Length: 44
Image (cartoon, rainbow, N blue to C red; front, side, top):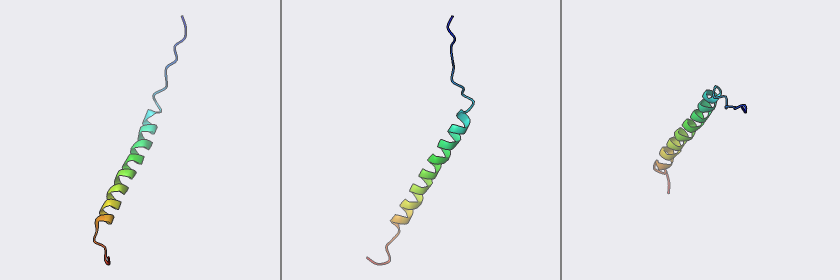
């Protein structure tokens, strides 16, 4: 019978944490830049 290799899923937590932090940073920066860009310009 051939040997079956399975992926080690124990490292998935670190990977999920990295992608979660990255996603959170992108979302927050988008919100901050959107609010800053929507503010009235002092001189047009």
